[in-house]
Amino acid sequence: MEKILNLILEKLDKIENVQTQMQSDIADLKANQAQMQSDIADLKANQVQMQSDIADLKANQVQIQSDIADLKANQVQMQSDIADLNLKANQAQMQSDIADLKANQIKLETRVENIETQLLKVVEKLDNIEKKINDIEAINATSHTEIYMKLENMTEDIIFLKHKEHQTEEDLFKLKLKIAK
Image 1 (cartoon, rainbow, N blue to C red):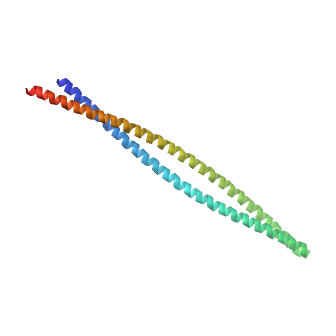
Image 2: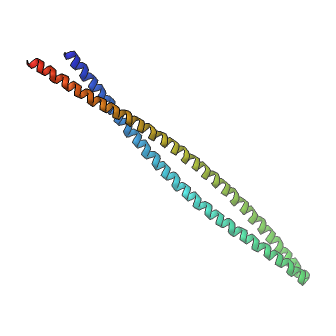
Image 3: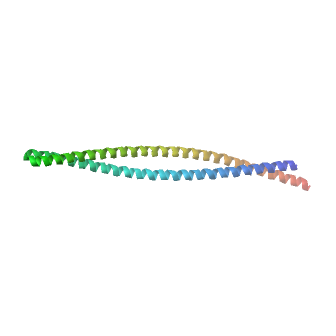
């Protein structure tokens, strides 16, 4: 009889250990989920900052394109003035100005190309961030599914343990009654 009681106590100890381990696993999963949510929030903040930077780069690009259009209009106006004046002295100065404008135009075009390159890099980084967010969301969804499955199993185990505990108490009560007689 004592052997049976000892076996029952050992099984109850094992069940308590399993339950403790499951609670620890749940706590770890919750901590991991909190960390993932924090990482997602950080990635979203970075994405918002990058989008703001892209908007600024686009605004700068529009301004540069406007400046280029103004320079081209000025260049056309100068060429018209040169044709109207036909003065050699002014023509030489105007040619120098045109050369400066062309040099400035080349510099502006180079800057525009650099901005476009930077814009492409920013877009690539945003794509990478979006992929990372999608990966994290997939991992998070998997973790949620695993947690729910473990909780369901744990609920069933607890119900079973309570049932077994009740049966054990009944058996102990019956044994005590027999011993008392």
